[in-house]
Length: 113
Length: 115
Image (cartoon, rainbow over all chains, first blue to last red; front, side, top):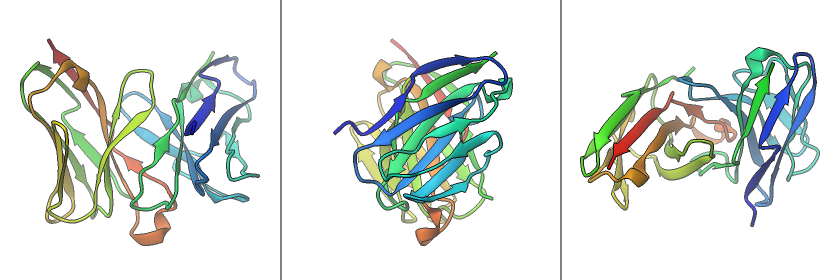
């Protein structure tokens, strides 16, 4: 069991570039989420999914796109990177989605110049 | 929307000392989670509290949820350098199935333990 995996671990982009952060889980979890972590602000929800084909926006969705074509994968796309998107990104998954442990990936540290 | 406030924001203690981190919610807590994070790594689940007055322990860490379900505390007994890291509280934003796997988080408490 690999749990939740994220790639890449580190990434540097120039303003305006696009990229996809990968997230995969092998626990057959229906619920998956993307968070960003910034100093002094905890984790903030970007997008989430309740199953394959179903996604919705979280607290800070602007500038990000997601899709969920399979239960296992939940990629996060940055459409046109901005310095304000410099952050650490975490993907998480859970089985029941309520009163249930969320499993977190190791994170992707993104810097936008 | 629900807001979680953690206190203190940072804490420096000497090894062997006890300490407490608090997490206060603006609304009723339906599920309260404590996570630990080491620098550069992901979040490690510590425990989840659901019922008012509930208390859970794991090794030297004890977490409580108050009767009114609007505040939780995390207490570490006889702290060790291995306890150092960022402690985050998170909460299910809604009751029942409408949380959809989303969590609201506090801003985190940075714990440093000096040997």
